[in-house]
Length: 175
Image 1 (cartoon, rainbow, N blue to C red):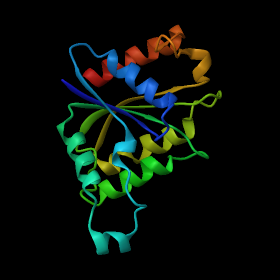
Image 2 (tube, rainbow, N blue to C red; image 1 turned 120 degrees about the vertical axis):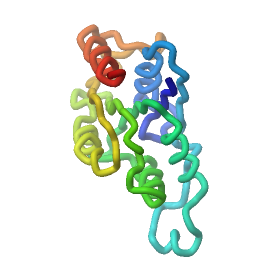
Image 3 (tube, rainbow, N blue to C red; image 1 turned 90 degrees about the vertical axis):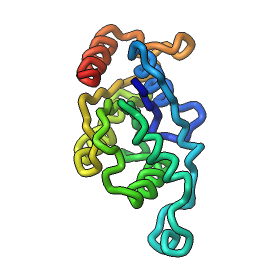
Image 4 (cartoon, rainbow, N blue to C red; image 1 turned 30 degrees about the vertical axis):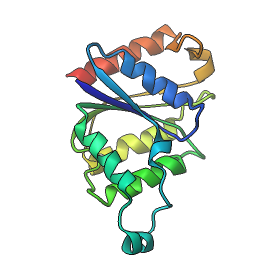
């Protein structure tokens, strides 16, 4: 099984990248690829840019990575209650290739933040919009207060209730 995991963030210290990587590592016998959105940096999307220069090759590479995956895990960072500009831009360019960006791939959508909200606003937006972009969301999970519930040095969740919720989400993803 090919698992594609990434944070919807371009932060080099992304707690969402840590969470996505951890979740992907829990899938047994999987070939896991962790994407870095920094590898897909493009000019800010505009129809004028698209008309002048076409769709950047980074968008096609991102689309191809999604198409090659059997399962996708995304952990969303929240900026002012919404998607990060980095993720939104990659998504916007990629959707110009095909509105069915996620190509009916089974997905686990997650989010975390340092605070008690657990980035639930952006996670809700992602889950609610997913069907419009051919995302087969099997489960979603918010992890509040990241640094209270995740051991950064060990690279794992420390809260047994959240760990159990993640295990349940991964079981749904496997079905």
